Amino acid sequence: MRESVAVSTTKWILSALIVAAVGCGGGSDSGGGSSVGSGSACNSIGYGKALKVADGEQCLADSGSDTSSVVKLSILTGGGGVATCTGTVISPTAVLTAAHCFAFGDVGGVIITAVVNGAKVDVSSSRVVTHPGFSASTQQVYFNDVAVVRTASPLPVPALPLLLSRAPEVEEESLVAGYGQTEGDGPAVDDVVAGRAVIRLVTDNHVRIDFRGGESHPCRGDSGGALFVEQDGGLAIVGVVSQSDPSVSADQICSKGDMTLYTNTQSSAVSDFIISQARDAAVR
Image (cartoon, rainbow, N blue to C red; front, side, top):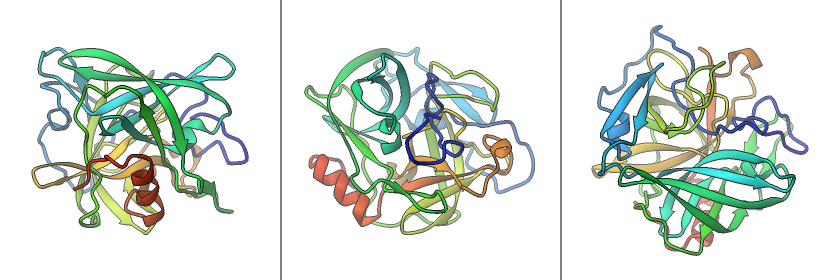
């Protein structure tokens, strides 16, 4: 994950200046645990073809109908480097991601890469706003870890909605998707990876999934990607990748026993911020 100022760097999901920022599947873990649905996760986020990787699917953009609202963010740093995060389009001109993606100093701009009709299309950002209350507790738990990236021109993919009509539920099936590693010591991938997991804990500020059984899980390099649940026949956002739980040891990250905290987008402090920065955001 990307190093940050005044917070522990061992628990971030964004890796220091590596070009990777959300991957699912983690390490392969075929142990016991609750099973999750067998439907293609890639199909759910707009792709027609998938390649099995670890406990997730690498979504292959090779069809003219492949269009996804899960996007890659290439963040240009003040020192001339590039960091990468994942985001989700929530309005024609807004992308939701994590605040800690921008915690390393000056940002020279963000390039948003979307898959549109099977091709990758780049759109430049016009403004980035991080939550003013983004902070870490004394236990190194992060709060309000969200940011909104705005564009001057419309993004060429549909928006996915924030789920505000009901709370996510423990034991509810969810979907994770993004760009990054598919195993703990592997390279980042160029195409989005997606998979299914089960929600294990819901608090006012966080939603947690655990790496167990055949479920998918964020891996090193994952930041800013959304946690989705199904609502009214489509996907809706209930969280944003923030960090591994502080109780997880460094050698467990991306391995059996990892637990990832997503910022709960239904927290009033979080949802109010998102809507204030993207008043045209989709809501369900």
